[in-house]
Image 1 (cartoon, rainbow, N blue to C red):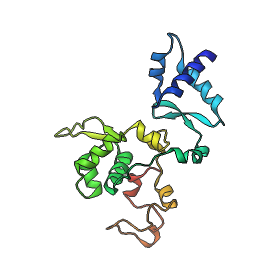
Image 2: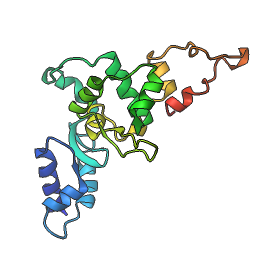
Image 3: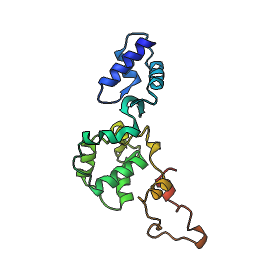
Image 4: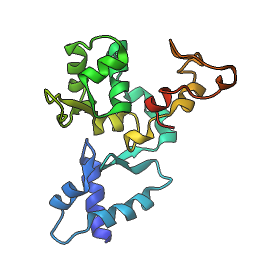
Length: 198
């Protein structure tokens, strides 16, 4: 098992992108068990400067979250996303798989082709399966690159409504057109709980 751990460690260390267990199995000698080697390797790296982390259905070696501040000079910030792109990305992340019509319905405005193209170029979204409805519209889902960039294991790890409010990213005001009774003011609005998982 020690030799298999070394092989998995070498592959993860040399790979810029997260690697699936199936890919590890293809690269390793016949009969090797990369899944078990990952379990041992993950334990070995606990509490170290780098960790073996799961990203979607793949694995990668990443800097420990508490040491991220040391890498600030290493990161290069490119152009910022437009508000339309951020809104579109958030809708896809929370409602995936989402069609263009669903995105437009939630945003209340048309989504430009450039916004979707930009998110596809960043490889933060990808095409999902076509819906089995008239016209068979294409759907969009977030990618492992999106999960990796934001340090998420899966889309279920996205912050919920309460966490976003606590961080000051959402107003405590009711949605436009929503009517609240006096004793309901502290509760989540109907419809908002569907937008964000708690």
